[in-house]
Image (cartoon, rainbow, N blue to C red; front, side):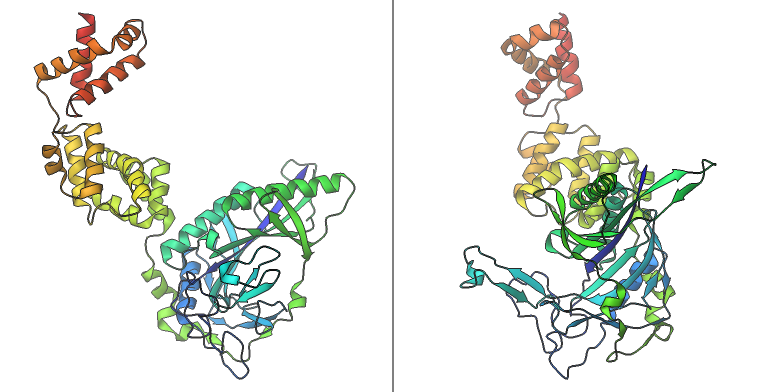
Length: 488
């Protein structure tokens, strides 16, 4: 039997006004190359870096949220390696004295969280026809230094993860935390959050007692190029199976860095892995040593007092107070604005009202937002009034959907729209009966199917009756009238 061991290294670009060590703009949406640059982030001789305090605060907030140990003493180090996207020939990072040590997130132990600067971005035009942005550059590799020097969080987990699903769950929860704290947008498709997985497998044999095993650590392989949570899970699963097959075939796993080919759904060799000695770490001489206890606003107490409600606390509260489905709860956690909107709508209301509102928000409202790309209301009061009309049976479910769509298109209150379009629910038995009779005369096939025992035909007839009353008929009354008419 083989036991996988997985550790994650996750980088996230932090949300600050300026870069890590200079005053150049930190703007991940900039499409023009090499405009957010200056002599410092371009490594001109004689320039000196200055530490971005807001970036440090973001790391300390993350550390406090995961209950890690915040450093009193910390410093930055030079990490030397030579690639075209490293203008200085080294990266300013942290090695022996990270800002955060330890902590737990989603049941996974964290080794450290530290702060460093991002690299530039290489653009490999290759042999493709030259694009307008790279006219005349086909077959070349270009470097965009806009990203060079952006504040970057690196979080390293302990090698305690045993399966791909746990790794994916941890990464998703970290993204949620970063967004909740306002530390990072953490969009993986934009490279704002990048995940690397260290994967190894080892055989283990049971000892005399069932609670003990004879474990040997396998050779670690680092997998890069993981740009989605699904890729993380698939790459880890593939790599586990690849290593097991290699060992079973008499081969040997090599310590290396591998990439993930999303098209082929497989990993591939990139280079043999460097060790820490290869980076020749030493303290950054151009930056001061940090004694955080001397900075009151960066104390653990000050950081903790500034934290918003954390995702896991909010998750438990929504599930407990409103008895929501897990899918709705996760949506309100992931979409912060939608979550705020929901809580305004249901403030002081019962769980039944909350579940009704959640259903309309996560289905009808989301569909309108997706189609139109905008917000429906400036405040939650109008939506709350719409839900009150549903609860009081003034409008039907179908009528509520129609009103909501009209509110999205034209604005206005639900009461006015309901009156103007004749959507107020009708309770006049005779009017409803006449509408039902008309439907039954037209829908003879559905009538026969219902009499033959097909219950779905009844729902079809109710729907047709609702349409005949322009969504103003009370569904329960229509159902009873249809049954009465068909029995007669």
